[in-house]
Image: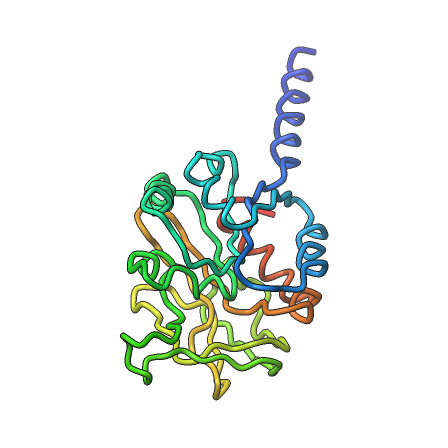
Length: 237
């Protein structure tokens, strides 16, 4: 009988562990977006729960240590200002190995903080008189984007190609050290538009798609995003 209780106890512990959702800190701010469809995207994800923080309160929360309780931080912000204490908070998170997922226009954030480009693995270069015009990045709305999966990776599992009606970025900078996840041959887009980067002890993923409701309502985009969250959280869903 004792063995039965032991087996039952192990089963209950295992079940409870599997039933625990991935807790994400969801960060927005600095750019308009289709809010209803965006939050519905996360509301519909099974095994994922989120707490929303908008900038600048999100960065204040990082300084206060609020990110510690979350499994993954998901950034959909496009924020300009960052203080020295906030920079230190980001670096501290990566030294702890906190997984970070950056989406779409988050690549434009913190143009004047050079370390951010190293952290995320690339940069959208905004117009700046101090930078030659031929280095400026570009964008194109409302185009069909065909993405070819490059690597047998948990994030792209089940995909050969992904097709989305979305926005593309051109002439972006991408580090040679990233692991490319998918590319596109769209003439207005940079070639590599999704990657994994390593910075300090953190795994960091950037996914360029995700401009508006047409992407948010795509089953493929939802699957891609959810697989990225599960991968970064280290779960087996």
